[in-house]
Image (tube, rainbow, N blue to C red):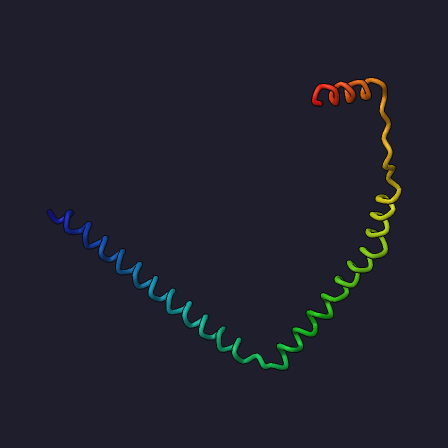
Length: 107
């Protein structure tokens, strides 16, 4: 009978220890999150505008490059291909015969 009471006591100690560890981890996480939020609030408007300016300086050359590439390479290539395409077609005697039969049958 002594063994059966020892198992619930050991289980209770394990659960209590786990809950205490979890409580400690949650408190640590809340402390870190609060500290980081305080640091985030400390940023000034000037530093935010500076970051925006630096981001735009890094972003604009890529956009300008894509516009120049499209207008000097892609668009002329597309127009040349479009306008140099032949709009004529050839028809051999078999195709002409089948086309003629199709017209005769459906009219």
